[in-house]
Image (tube, rainbow, N blue to C red; front, side):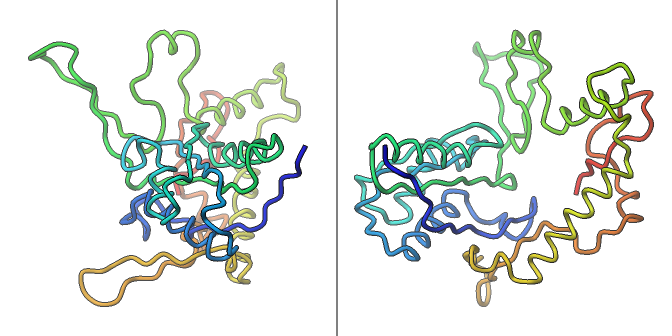
Length: 267
């Protein structure tokens, strides 16, 4: 069995929802990274067996095998195959795992693997009418996050929850003195402290240039003048303080009868 190794890694900056990268199509963004990876490694593009990309949305410009579209847009030869994986939040990691498995199984020597997502460009989606000239209202789904077109049978079997809602379930279990989680309720203060420390570490890492070598800048063309260069992660909250976080409203509903909701704030 062959050994699988990662020889290099590159990414775009992480953008905020509706932020600096909102004008960039996901297939173009992925193509930029693939092209830069080939340039950095010096690998012959013709030797790439397949390109594996994870993508959780696939409802808009990332539809119809975005990995294949990005591969062609990056200028790789047409014979280089590509596959898109969807394991929701684990899609990119799953793509890398699949590439490692393929190498170990002897299915190829060179793979490119990663993920692409643009929540900013996720479209609204409407169901088709099942018969001509129907009447009544229809539901339009925002594909940015969460379920759309849920199957009623599935909904009867399992709660169709988003990841943030499952975190609320953990919070609820921590409030149940007879439940499976020991230690008592997970307090708002504890969660705020954990979140604040995470933000502090991210800001410090950006300030110290720890991510500089792994980021490829993205040029955003402007109607007038030179393009805007995006080369730094947008997301960390640079001005976050414990007092400021208490003023943020929770992104998900609180659990009744168990004090204040957690710090899963919409930032």
